[in-house]
Length: 164
Image (cartoon, rainbow, N blue to C red; front, side):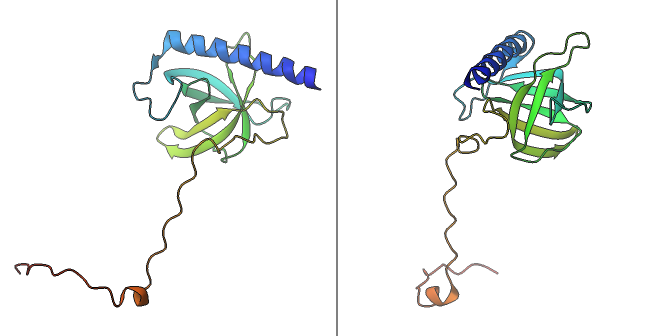
């Protein structure tokens, strides 16, 4: 099992490298790095997506919006739930390429359908990626609003009279 897993990971990594090289040649780097450590490449390319690459169901068309070593964004007519695993590949008619597994990190409605953001997930199917969605720092909890009783004795500053 470990040997098969290693072979799959190497295949996925080779395919990802090929796609990144193609995107660099046809797209342009995003000028806003934000919190990213790697470069995101803006590119518009036709791709296919499926929820199960072993199924006989027909994949649907998506349009790659950007890609990096960590993940990608694509436009889709189909909504996918956050946390779902799905697969993406380049869609040349004569030579379909390797499916790349990803896990949805966001999916929002837009003018062209749904903008799906996903991270590549090379963990075995049926298992959860322990690092998924934990890469960002958790949001600090919102402080509770003070109750009216707790602020009843609070002195308010004197404000100048405002003209009416």
